[in-house]
Image (cartoon, rainbow over all chains, first blue to last red; front, side):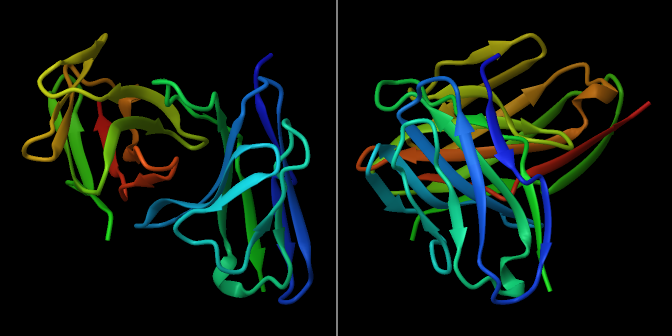
Length: 114
Length: 111
């Protein structure tokens, strides 16, 4: 089954404790992206990657890191989480380039930073 | 600064009503406009629009883009309770693959 998976689905952590949210897709997509979703703000793009070893900042990259060492994986790293990073996070992927912009979203990770 | 605005932000209708959701945008290097439906989970893709005046249709849903006036509408006819969701509008740009989402319209369809 074609899908994007994220882990963990739920996470409660404390300020300053480094964490990683994993994202993996099995569709051989070149493009992957991370979003956060907050009430009233919609989805905001954090980082995206056009291909392996190619990453770019979205609109809200501060406090986040990403890496793209393999095509299928795109982990999101919070080196020192803060309460304002409490949010619902989505990973997404799509075929890069071309006219198709149908992104496939993962199920979401709900993060709470206390 | 790139911006996507949606209206109304929330809407309550009765089953069978027709609704129109609005999306306006101000972005440089516009490439396409996308509509997504989000229930209590991840967004699912509805439409992609790139050309003005060409209606996209899927069942009771349809959408059209006006690139001159910089807006799009999403119409849902004969609404059902299963249409209750947040509808997200997003814009993509030609220069790079950033995606800018609007805040969404929360639609509630009551029996």
